[in-house]
Image (spheres, rainbow, N blue to C red):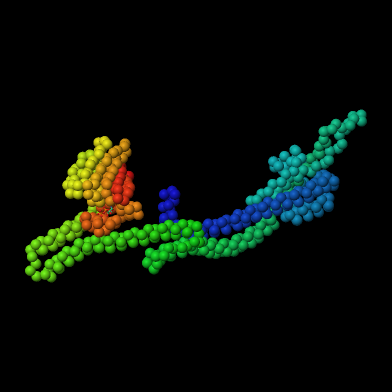
Length: 499
Ligand code: ADP
């Protein structure tokens, strides 16, 4: 919508309400046709009344014009019959008749004002010339003016020696004079006024009825939206967390559906948050409980030999290390949640980085006789966050070693195309059961809790790894066969694009 219109709507806040708009539309749709109808009917009444009056008067004038010739009125104005006819006409229509002879002299004026005068008005001269009558309605002063020719029928055309008159030879009537008549249309105007007043009263009555209908309709039609707001408010206030239902309109159903989806998502988020908090508390509590048990059992005994102290202290130190690891993992995860802003992108030699990480991890692998090999298909440099990339590789290779068998093997394969580089971390370990595959990226999820704990796992490693991969707009996939081994495939774009 145009910004200007929006500004105007903002100023008149009420116009932004659907209720106000429905009211205005219904009101206009109701009232405009009645106004148009009033004007239309009154105008057509006036046209019809004027045309009826015109043809009425015209007919009578033609009769009088004939009589004028019959009674030879143009040369002798003493005819009583004509005077009576003229009188009647002017009384009937509140009009004035002027009779003009062929010399343009007024021989009769029913008003008696212009007798003897010469008339040289354009219409009279024209009528005299072509023998055609005319009429014109003057709606400013409310009268109709007529010019009527006084025609004497033409004598039969003379033909020499019995010749028949040629076809098409039309005998022309002779114009002996003109009648100039004006009749008032006051009576039409009076009727029109009465009608107009009645129509106005009806219109005002209709206005009230339409106003009431528009008001009621606007209220009824917007009711479902009020119901939606009320239902959502109830959820918001915490009275209920049941899905909302307002099926009155398709539109309200759509709004409510979208809201219910949001509600379900929020509930899921809330459940996952609660689960996470309880998991964190549990995980953090376990090492402390162990420390407490170890310390208590030392305190409970008297004259504890130094070796036992030492043994217990080693266990206590291990539990403290574990606590430290969990806290560090939690911190890494929180950092990962901060999204794009926390990425520190630079051009990194992936081959060199992998070599360094594998070199660091080989001593751990060697303890269990596990061979770690690196297979690089090409030299790869990519725009990545070096610290997070290290975290990804370390976690995956560490897992491949941790969940391996004695004398097993780990192979890291690096490859690239023109867009992405891929790292396959392949191990010959214990594998992951199929039903666990979809859960391994969840926080604190471990296939075998006690085994993982034994080898120092927190259940956060893969969650952190996946977040780090997604931050680079990459993907991570896993395929595994229980008892045979697991392959993790990480695919990351070579160049980082900020959207
Ligand atoms: P943890 O700290 O327990 O290793 P992770 O999030 O790294 O947690 O891994 C989650 C679980 O997935 C592990 O507990 C383990 O059961 C399973 N897992 C991960 N990597 C492998 C692998 N390479 N082989 C077998 N199981 C694995």
